Image (cartoon, rainbow, N blue to C red):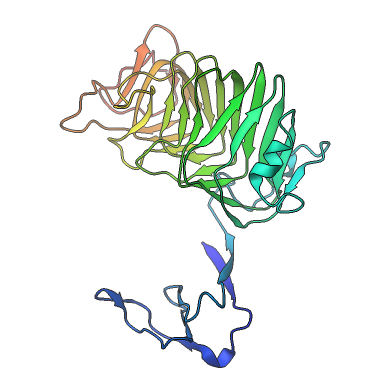
Length: 318
């Protein structure tokens, strides 16, 4: 649920109409004259009579049934308070400016819940640990126009914390990328039919904790740990976890998953551990997959206290 208030500075109260803005053919039921503003309090729709002169900003409070994904809940216990962050939007006007200031290590913190139409890239120097996070009890939105590229030199670590990300995927590309660890905590990557996270390199440790994300593609040789999260490929016969081939049919890196829900098919080299997890997976009638949940290695790993659909190929189940 959400509580919303509308701030329309400079708009005369007499020029605001309260009316029905439901769908009617190709348009809305009512179209106010130019220069007037209309609000439908039932549908939450707004018609801006002169948006160029009066930019519209909506303030709202976001609610969810659990403290997971990007949200306004208290995350103070997981935030490092000993390192002074580089803050956005002041003194850094853009996220990229703050990230560029901490390539040797540090924290870039977004201190409001605004929308940022920006496609930053993270580049870490050797041995650096970089975190891009939302300030406590804030929920900024990053609207990407491409992929959010994460890269680093030898033994680098990158963390994302408390963010809502839409419009593109997080990508760890190859070609000399030596990133060692990537941590996603309390983030939402708006699920679509395309992958949310793509790891193209081996020897990476990816941790996903208290997140809501779309499909994941991970190269063989990397390890993924998912806890207290939702992985949503948007339907049970779509691919939720796989390797990095275009068809999303090869096996993805070693997977450990606990206390989570997976919507979509899973193909991994090794299901090292699945515990307290629900796999909402199914084969399409024309599917090339042999099983809705498929672990290449069946003599190592285990599945316990979980639901996997009939026909799944997994290690021993307890």
